[in-house]
Amino acid sequence: MPRMARKDLITQYFHVMSQGINKEFIFETDQLKGKYKNLLRKYIRESDAKILAYCLMGNHVHILFQAVNPYDITRVMQMVNTNFARYYNYINGRVGIVFRNRYFTQPIMSREQLYNCLVYIHNNPVKARNSAKCKRL
Image (cartoon, rainbow, N blue to C red; front, side):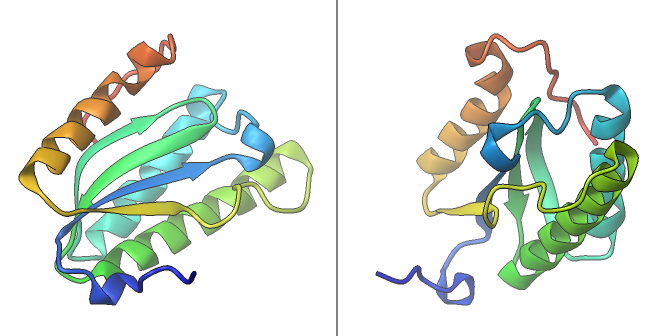
């Protein structure tokens, strides 16, 4: 069954998750985490979307977006993930894909779901027993 097009969704909130291929740790160093966050900052400024919460883990990232036009999220994620993959491949002397599939998007359809998503994102490092910190961009 095909997925519903984002443009057809009646919501402004989206939970996005992007994971390294084969669940590899692609955010192992502060340098790599910093590069991803800098790209996120750059491309979010060029859109009308807002980031309400995010959590950058060793092998994946969670982002809670608010966007009137879902295309803004598509554009931000496309630019961030493509440019990060180029950088990652360059500094690691490798070629090929870095992220597993296309990023996952879950529309947030209620206030309760929005709060649950916020809690989930902020508790993700605790649950994973990871020392990653969720900070403001």
